[in-house]
Image (cartoon, rainbow, N blue to C red; front, side):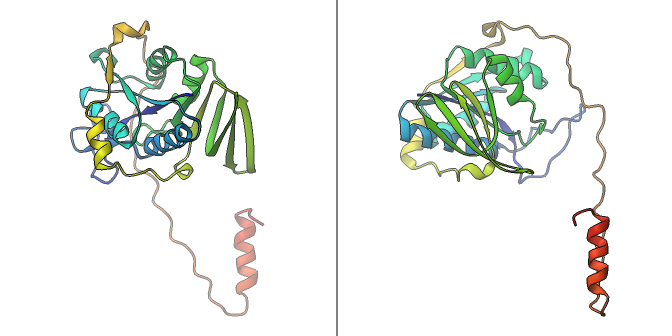
Length: 252
């Protein structure tokens, strides 16, 4: 069983964040492995421990994105691939998916695991594009993954209820943060990660072309301030007033 997990280095969510001139998040400060991807790595490791095989981490970013891969290797992943090239700087979701697909296709994985969306871009568009480019069925928002022979079964919570969805492998699965609590890297794991392979791939190795950007950020505006709530005093009419509020909100 070969499991590929896509990972990304992002600005630390716990630090103060700034914007670049193109409205993207500034990355000159502290950067970390995307917390959502840590959950994907953890699930990949659990599946490997249950079914055997290897876990390969694939990332795209500048040279220092190697640190994000190294953290995943210290958790227990087997090796990594870093797609890094100045020609990929500022890539939009489509170009990112094309680059990842080219690198992943060469690995011929049984399962691809992605976070639902990255902390910085938050488009949630790369996984579906990646599945389409790889020609794989996509199972989304997984809270639990089960592998059974040549099929993968996903448990997911939606606004309409709890669903169990199944597809043949190979397949691509996006996972939520609730799927697994990421393990801490042990000292042994950290030491072992230093000698694990991280293969670097350049733009010319991918066999893709960079076209015009299909996604740009035109501007940024503050989110609407949360409105103050209403306090309903218990004066004998409270029940009727609460029902009226709920009816106006169309929840009853």
